[in-house]
Amino acid sequence: MRSETQERFYPMDRGNPFNPPEDYAELRDKAPLSRVRLWDGTHPYLATRFADIKVVLSHPRFSCEPNREGFPHVLEGRMVADKADRSFLRLDPPEHDRLRRMVTKEFTVRKVEQLRPRIQETVDRLIESYTSLPQGADFVEHFSGPLPTEIITYLLGVPFEDHEFFHRATRIQFGSKSSQAEVRQSLDELFAYLDALIDAKEKNPGDDVISRLVAEQLVPGHVDRETLINIVRLLLSAGHQTTQNMTALGVLTLLQHPDQLALIKQDPTLIPNAVEELLRYSSVLHMGARRVALEDIDVNGHIIREGEGVICSIPAANRDGELFPDPDRLDVTRPQARSHVAFGYGVHQCVGQVLARAELQVVYGTLFNRLPDLRLAVPFEQLRFRHDMFVYGVHELPLKW
Image (cartoon, rainbow, N blue to C red; front, side, top):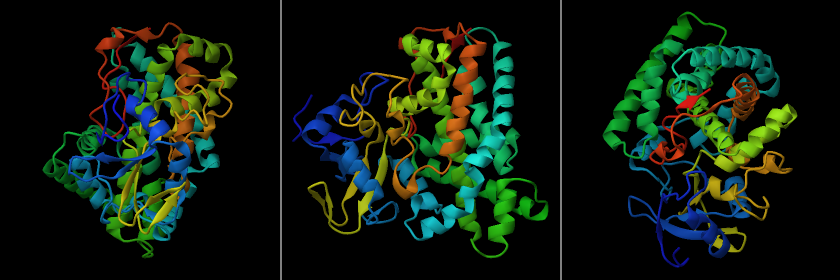
């Protein structure tokens, strides 16, 4: 471990694949707002304490717009995707609020509960399909990848048969080794695809989110075409990328913690809380939420100057012992598990979190009941984790049942 006065390069390496980098705990205790160095030579702050991160993510004068001077770009290729993004995710209020309201009604608790039978049917069918394969089949390829993709494409009205195209685009746009040129080309291809899809929805609308956005927002002129394409791109990528990785990583985490898995098998009413604890414990958005100060701002006694960037570490916040006693222990009965910031915090928190929770609850509530002997098919040490991606998880998960 280094002194807190020594500058770290970001992103940092993990020791244990289930835990955030060891430096986070040291920084949280000694220098919870400290400078780090990025690939482009810039030196934003890294926030590692829950209380500080809540201030940054809720303060109206911290901007999330990636084209502003000082905004921290943690990956070279990702910078291209961020700067091209015109969805509400990368806009400040009031424009953020106006655009977000266009889609929030599609992801309410009532809407998601109406969708739950379809989620259950999809999970049941994918389990049947998965268990028809040879023992050791990849759970990511045959279950955790298809599940959220099927659900989000159904909701949006996107042809599921094009899922390989979306997954390839996501791998490029979220990969740490992707060049700017590769990301730019991938974005151009995805934009062209979505532009053509919106054309098709104008001519032949269906009962889906894109058709409603076209009819209710694009045609009356409430949103321009480029912005609508960006909104659909956000919903499509976020709708499968994060849930896919959280599904597989959560299954692996439970398999590696058999005492906790036994608890939810014995008492299925624990599953909703277990989902919250797994979200806290795993925190797949491991490269954080980023902001830049629009003026000098006091963050619990530390002044962030105008134009200085801040990376809010979601994994570090979710392992803060001030809020979560014994934070490195998985505890599916943890009373305050839902206090995590796995979906972000403030006005920009994940618009699809109700859907993600429902999918995870159905998976964990069904999978281990249907396959009580589910286990790893390879030694744990052979698993490849997604250190190289903006969203954390496992590349493959071979299982036996």
